[in-house]
Image (cartoon, rainbow, N blue to C red; front, side, top):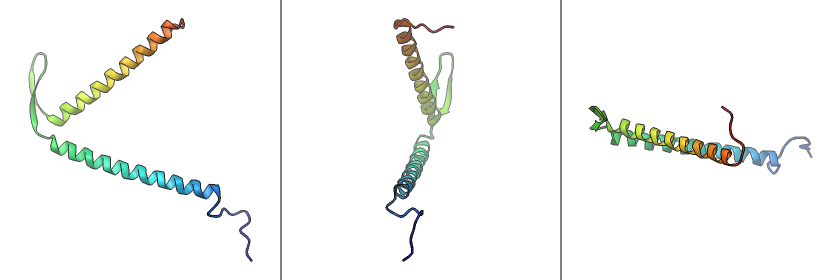
Length: 99
């Protein structure tokens, strides 16, 4: 009988880890493809132009740009609020940050 000494078999932990990693990568690829399809559908569905009023002027812009700019600005405000809270907590704990 031939011996598989030193070679990983299907029941070895390394082999199972490799299959688990392959499965995770496949799930990530499928999720990325689904997200891309949804993004394209979202862009195509919101491609009409709308009139957007700014403080001093108004402009015709594609709706998708309005939505993306609003999402980015919302994310930035969220990050700023988190940063301010962290600094306040650090200052309240008696460990102020140096400029």
